[in-house]
Amino acid sequence: MVGPSPSHVNAVFRQQTGTGPLHHQVLLRMARARELLDTADLTVAAVGRAAGYADPLYFSRQSSPVQGESPTAYRERHHPWRAADPAPSVWPGARPGGQVSRSCEGRNRSGKFWYVMG
Picture 1: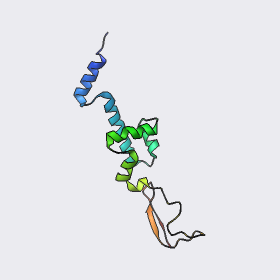
Picture 2 (picture 1 turned 180 degrees about the vertical axis):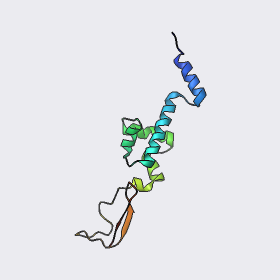
Picture 3 (picture 1 turned 45 degrees about the horizontal axis):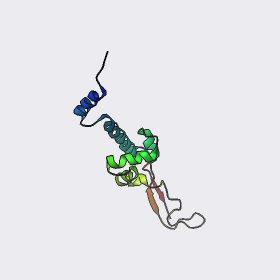
């Protein structure tokens, strides 16, 4: 039994979806990556792996033309508090001995606030 040719399957797929199968797969992977960048507390490399890319650099290069920006830029623009470190390595206003001279606050990657009284 003979089935349809690969070019015929490609033409039908393109007619139904408006894009080829490989580009459609890239779009699905990027949609999953955007979802993870929006909701998960993962590194960009982990997001790339979860979206189906073994190489984080390749994931970043693929996403730039599709999304118009790198995954890091997307996260910084849409969720600036996720792009920052969970907490500064040296607290603002910290003095030797761990004393803090003024109040400071912020958000960590999970969205929770941290607050230190001075």
